[in-house]
Image (tube, rainbow, N blue to C red; front, side, top):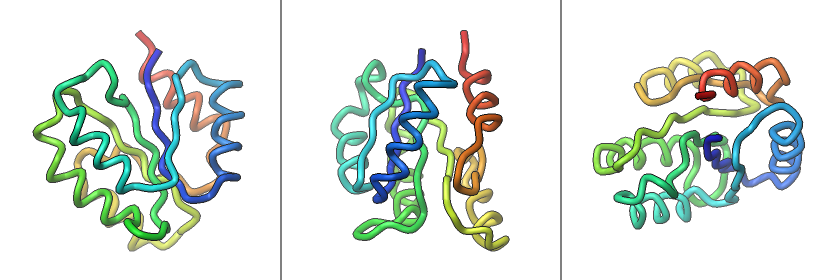
Length: 130
């Protein structure tokens, strides 16, 4: 069972993801409303792979540090982490420029347009089963 972290400023998105993950996936789920807090957590725990997430779902449009800023900061931090973490961008944006830009980050596994579907969650869940 993998660890999943959701970064989104919308509490409704958290509830939807929590419900869908519980129903269709076998992940341990945690969430944050603030990307800055997550970056601090990752940095502070970079040598503790057992508590780092396997997957991070990150929204693009958030206050303080948005999803793009998170990806830039994560890219700098990534090589110091003792565990590979897969990132999934999840956004309401259907702008092809956003999709292309997200694809430029090698660690971004997919760009998912909200709302996430059962089929997409099952696909992701299947990739992380032992």
